[in-house]
Image 1: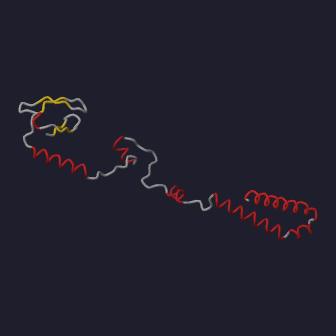
Image 2 (image 1 turned 45 degrees about the vertical axis):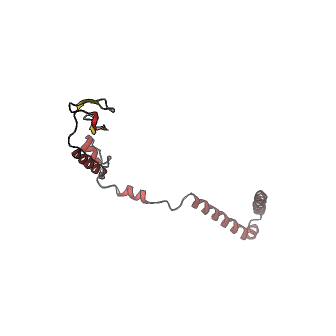
Image 3 (image 1 turned 180 degrees about the horizontal axis):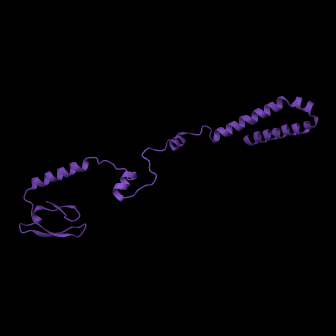
Length: 158
């Protein structure tokens, strides 16, 4: 026999012979509620009720968005100031825009820029020295530093 607590709606399975015709005092093991239970005569009716409840539980329930302004107004009486039903297009445009130049793009750009600058300086080194003779020491020192860095990296890698 299936017993149903009237307080917390918890269900219990009890043998049929445990409850006599005169009834029996039973207590819910979950909430402690006590009541007098009489035997249920129509077992088929009880089985149909259980099947209906299972089919009701299996139906998907529609999900409610608990944070919409309408729901908060209706359920809790909260009014949100400055609420627009349509989202602000400027904010959406800013969110949808993606940065086309990320961190690694900047690194690659700087690397290409300095390699190009280094190549142009190497190509025009003799013209610069003829025009500005005092710059010869600085240009030679610059290339010497890069040669030292190149040798150090080669030794470090090997």
